[in-house]
Length: 223
Length: 244
Image (cartoon, rainbow over all chains, first blue to last red; front, side):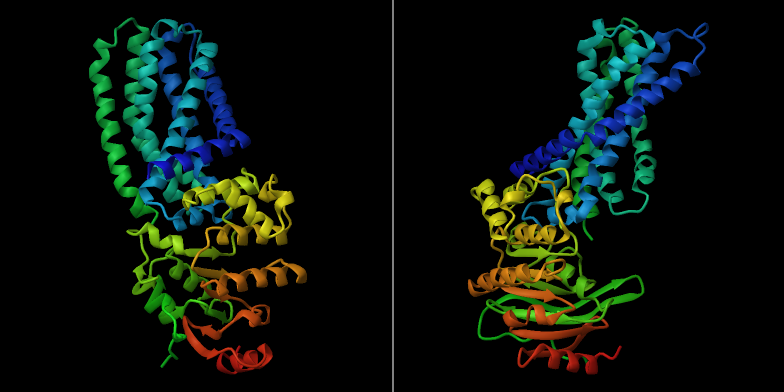
């Protein structure tokens, strides 16, 4: 199963590296969101450091959703999803493959969002890079699982590009809230030990949704 | 009462379907279809638009679940629980199942890896050569003509040597030369022990390799017979059985 999953993930990454359609659209959206947020604040009343955590995670949430949307569109073209469902591999392997690729896409977008936030809000992430290196994957693992399942559902639907963000946004609340809280506290000088409770919450969220999505995926791709 | 599905010859069944029913809301796409097909048998199915032919192929392939009835491929039920049974199926559908962001060779090698072929890259090269697309191996499917895309679709469906070929209008977009070459390719697979169900509006295209011909209408068999005579005579009987 792992071999098939890795084959599928490698295919997705290769296709994306070639077309860059998901990453480019996500990057463009990230720039637009940050641009709007930059001008939406009153610089004389609100310090950039107070806005930066929210800006980072709102941007990452929208951009990641855009990328997830794109990930299953590849399977929709020419009925390629039928090719996956016909292959002699477990449905769980399809989930794992798409999930691993989505984790990579989402992490890449978050990694692009951090320097953009630095650029727009002039915040120094240097001292908190270690904490961010832990926070980014933890916010991504569970959310990417949810995005993979909903991506599979909406791939067969009309107006998938509208449906997917609507469905996944409620599941983004916990990662975004924790992301904003932990980023703000780390930038404010707190240590990782002081934000451990938030990180434990993310771990629980990740485990629950990865397991749930693994169980649900074979059902949602069933005709 | 609907005529029975095509009957088995003196060979073991490659596919056996019993009482297939498929509903889409209030629409009955399959209304109790039986089918039994052994190795070396080719069933050519004709029928009007909306008769349920493509639905039948999707149900036989396991891509659509029947509302009632069962499908056995090589004696094993097709479904989500047994990925291995899907290895026996090669599907040529209206869609190519190929990715535009991969080259033809990458597409076939990817499929070969999913099917566990021992040397997927070599198998992809051989499959493309078989349909005359070796020079296009590095091209994206989006750059191919309709006929070339159809040949690539056939190569993808056949490269893992399936025992059961499910073909939906397999000659779409092919010129006369390539119709003949694909016919020979299919005939070779049938001679090697595969079975095929081929849906077409032009039975003459597959007449030479057909062992049975059937008409499908209203989600059930309307006509079912061994291939004898000429396709025009069969089409006349078909029009009599299924008035426009």
